[in-house]
Length: 513
Image 1: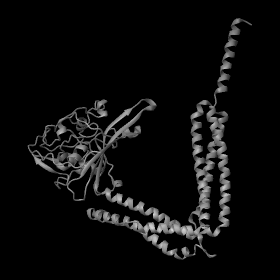
Image 2 (image 1 turned 90 degrees about the vertical axis):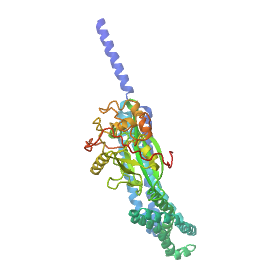
Image 3 (image 1 turned 135 degrees about the vertical axis):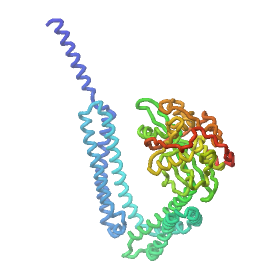
Image 4 (image 1 turned 60 degrees about the vertical axis):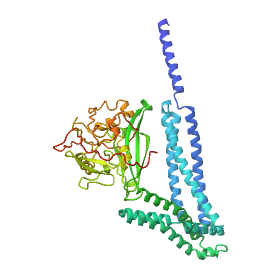
């Protein structure tokens, strides 16, 4: 055999050895295979537990038929067992796939196998918990039926707890809220009736069980222990629910005296590749009022960075500096408005109204501008990032038009034909130049990357508006819409300098948290 032939055979033999060695090691890692074996044993044990628990509970149902006949939960046990059995069947399906991977899987199947193991384990654990809960409930009911005097003492404690609960403060809060916010009267009355109804139900149960409680020490042959225990459970539930319902209603009445706004004040992407995150910063500005007619309020703010999905980040990319949630006084928190809008606009009265508790329309030099009262200077500065630019009438009217359509209003800077609000807005680029977004060059990518500074010398402007380098942090939410084009009034001047200087300073209420 020639030397060249031997060389070829040596190469072929080497390749075969490499292929055989690779195939010998190309299977699921040992740790994953061990997890599969462990779950196979655990699933088999869970299936046996299900069969044993069903048999035990069925025996209890038969031997204590009179007891369980009046227990609503007992009638649900067969269906709950059936549900647990179905969950275990789903877990068995996952295990069949895992067995196949264990036999024929490759190293590259590791992630899929680990995912299936986690899914199977979760299903098995849920079924096991359901099985244990049914068995425990049955045992506890039998035990309670054998200790009825102790059940009577528990009923007495729960009944006393219900009647000892003081609703005086809650009723006073509800009455005050109904007076301050008449439009909430019907809802508050309904909620209060639900709370007092718990006491009424407790009274009814207590009176209805008087005879049974007196017989519990030596129950007669026809004593309905199931119904008695069910009544005891009702009293226990009422004693637990009463303070919870009262606290929930007290919280709702308190929410009526707060207004709050969530402003997206900063956004940033961090990391690279699989470690990349999308972060937004939200400032929540809250103002508390002592009553509905109060002319001032205590304002504070809180800021938080929030990690969001890329889709959410992209969705609100245009809304830096915008109010992404607004909840006015007189509304519950769950009634908050989620429409994205320029900050502070929700507090402005209509021009026909002229003024409200927050400020007034001032008319000078042929123009109309909104002026916030001094006592709301802190709220104004937090909403406008310490750089308030007076809102002209045409701007507010454009906002209302878009708001009524369910669209986001970004305004128009007529000096540069750029948007005024949102990420591309000229006022936003002034207010948030010091944000992480601004410092990282976020504004440079905008076709509108310019700063008009139209109102910096206006006597209406906040002191910090004259210092565009000032900054505050901020964060999230928003909804993108087509940018509107709003026509200014015929006599609009790009740089208004009204001669009237509104009252400044004034007393500030509240403070930052």
